[in-house]
Image (cartoon, rainbow, N blue to C red; front, side, top):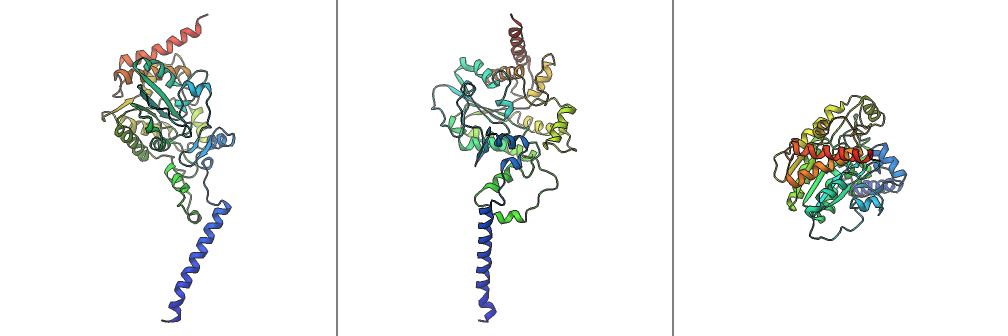
Length: 345
């Protein structure tokens, strides 16, 4: 055998050793590590820095483990807590983001829902985390939440799905965090010219289909919520300034595409669609239903949402995405009754 051929194995071994050494050095120095705050914007970065979020290998981040009055009042579940043992009550799981977890002076809509379905032997659990997308919701559902054996899962996602990521989509971020990912590849990866959406619309559809399939396979049914909105120039400017939108993004058109995906599930077996956007339009503007960001619910809106969900879950009214009088009346009464209580001496 010519000497040149004999040198090939040695050459390949040398190249392999050099690559392995380079990979080890990159890992030791932390090069190529992508952290949530670098991918998902200033709010996530701030929350992690302040300890309001904790890193999580599967879910990207999670809330700190707490057992405060609010957590107990909404039956909050946590990935680091064991789930409650099964009992005779049918379980309703609320799966979403900050719109389903945060309120101002009262409890989020899951508490109103609990008040209204308790007499029917139902117990409501809240598994919502600020900043979450359908990707994170699906992962949590598969890794833990299906163990609750929920009869109904309320799914309220969309906003974070169509915000711009500063680096990569949720799926790409998850792949970059996998142990098999080579840091050497980050040396040749090129950042996209246009920041991607965290969950592009096609992936959003796939994630919702997967959530529906998982819940249906476990014997439950799903309520998909079409997110209400009120876009103002002030709110849009703030989203551009913080990097959640590009200057050229049309927020109305963008949000509309994701709402269309939600409504495309109307008529599927074991799936109901609550058109909360149309419900809020029908409630009028006598009381503020959304905060200045045009996204998050006021306390009045949380009461209206809980009342509407109770009618849909118990009686099926509005499951086809319409706003029947019974549904509208329940939501309107929840808002007006609370207003009268506040005005009473």
